[in-house]
Structures are given as structure tokens and as C-alpha cells.
Amino acid sequence: MKLSLKLHEGAPGLPAVILIHGLGMNNYFWVDPEKCFVLGGLAPLTIFLANAAGKPENTISFGTMEHNMQGLWKRLQKAGFSLASWTQSQPLGPIQVAIDELGAVIDTVQNKWPNKPVYLVGHSRGGLIARKFLQEEKIPAIKGLITICSPHAGTGMAKFVRYLKPTGSFLEKIIPRKSKAALVKALSRLAEFLQSPAIEELAPGSSFLSSLEKTLPKQIRKLSFGGTSPALFQLVLRLPAKNHKIIKFPDMLMGAIPSVHLPHELTPGLGDALVAAESAKLPGSIHHNFPNNHVRSAYDKEVQKIILGFLS
Image 1 (tube, rainbow, N blue to C red):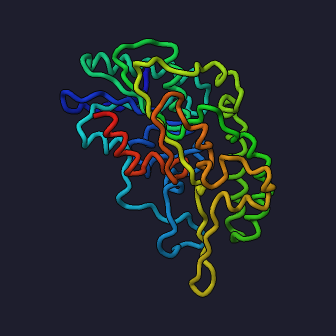
Image 2: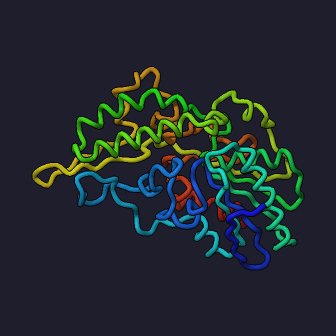
Image 3: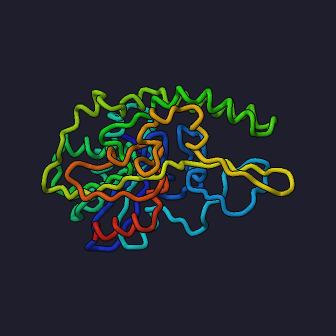
């Protein structure tokens, strides 16, 4: 099996860490966020890490990313850990494909560093890939699992597609005419993504989630994180007289979704826009919730600090 595998040899005496990206992403999620595109290539990862600091230079923008924001790869690399990660061959494909690839990556890591304990770190669907692998394979060298915003109890993302049309109608009223064609294309691709078979595997009660055992072996150390801010991204609009307006997701959906039907994924304090905090808890794990969206949790300095302590 030929994979796009990235390796880094760290200091002796420290574990090897395998990083597993989520659905529709790639290896750059861990290594270089400015080169990573998400949602099947729909959008650059940086729009989910941006804030509204400064005035927009363009008519419409997504804000700016903090300059000192660092991916987990570089943080672990500086701490001396040996690292491995890869871009899944089918990032929007069946989860079993990625599970099989993880097995090949683990074989490579064990051959390269045979005496090192191994930890798995998965973001979003990546955590489920690791969890299912550990259920199927018993490898003594694997000592722990860390999941970041992984939908262990499923996610209702597929249901969001019904709200894309009214959201698009709302956005068409406020964005410049020259941007409308791009909006239609983006919403169409997002709808395709949300209706993909890979998303269906993550729906509550799916056959895949039903196949997961409730607990992993006791010898596997477990740590998980959830997010409680559904502010996934924002549009910063430049208005006349050098003013600007900020519109955040999911605020732009409020007119499309009746408040009584607002899912936990989109409720402040309960979800990160894509996964509910309660769903992100890995059974039997030490669990932490942070006020981050689905992507920012992996870049949060405090989250990374806890991970470093867990691995050391």
C-alpha cells in the first residue's frame, strides 16, 4: 500500500505519535494549516481559524488568522516526539479505507522505531478511524488514544443541507453581485459534501457507529476534547464610509432554523458547529471541553499543552 506518509524522528525515550486527519481534509491539517483545504477542497482551513481583527481589505473576506497559531505537528516536533501522518487516499471515502491505511502506517512506524510506544491522535473522523482500528487490532505497542472533536455518538451534519437554500437566499441579499456566482458554487459543493456516503457513516445510529464497542481495553490510555463554540467562520463585509460588518456562522442560519429545532452542534455552549460536545467524549476517557469551534480546538494552545502532558 503506497501512502503519502510524512515521518519525523524525534528524541530517544519519547513515544511515537501518529496523527490522523478528519473527513475531507489532508495531512496539511497537522503540518501547515495555510496549505490545507477542507470540506473536500471547498474552503481553505484558515477561514475556520480566522478572527475579525483589522479592517477588511476586500469587499468580502473571512478575517485574518493569528500569526503565532501553530499546528500540533510542530508543537510535538519541538518537544522531541517522533511523528507520522499521512493524507488519506480517499478523504471523502468509506471510513474502512482509512482504517486499513492506518494499519499500514502503524506497521511502518513500528518497523522504523520498534522500541517506541505509540500513541494515536485523531481529529474529527480521524478519532473514529483510530478507535475502530484499536477495536479490531490488538497491538501492544499502542499505549493511548487522543481524540479531538470526534463524533463518538454521531453528528447530525447531514441534516444541515436542508438549511443551505434559505441561507443562500439570505447571503445573496448582502454580498456584492460579483460574488454571487461563487456563493452558488460553494453552497452546491457544500451540499454534495453533506450528502456524501462518508457523512452518512457518521450519523447517529449508523451501522458504523453501531459497530463500535462501548469501551476500549483498559490498558489503552484515553483523552478526548470537545468544542463548545459553534462560530465556525465569519464573513467580514466592507461597507461604505470605511465601515465593516461581521456575520458569523451559524448566526446566519438563525432565520432558517426554528430555535426549537436548533441542534446541539449549532448551540453555543453545546457544540462546535459540526459535533456536539457530548458526542465528542470518548467513552472511558479524561475529557475536556473548550470554547472552540470544530477546527480551532486542534490549534488551541491549552489543548496542545494538555496533550503534551498526556504524552510525556
